[in-house]
Amino acid sequence: MAEPTGWRHMSSAPKDGSRVLVTVRSSEQGPAEVDVAYWARADQYGMEGWRANDSYPGHMIEYADPELKCWMPLPRANANASALADMPSPWEGSEEELYGSGI
Image 1 (cartoon, one colour):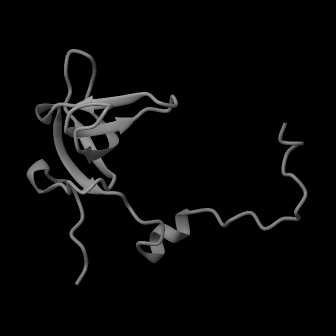
Image 2: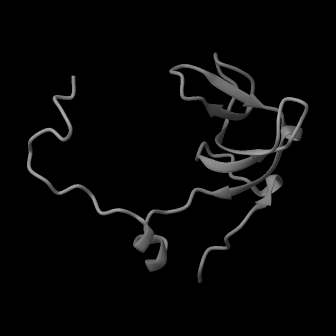
Image 3: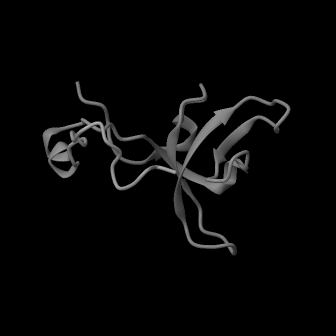
């Protein structure tokens, strides 16, 4: 049986630390947006709740429950053949560095 797709109510989101997509509600800070978040237990970094890591190392965002509208599982890279058609093939060139020295 296929897994259900689409957005789901936050009350059904997994609280096991796995990462999921969440819709952050619009507010005076900006429009609604999608983020990758996970449920974390209370620790030295914060209270129990939904967290996301920004692109800056060590920068953590904590979401209050009312800030999140809904969730969905992260999509799989090989969910179906049509998704594979849109994805590029892995680079299969020589062992030489691609586009420069990498320094």
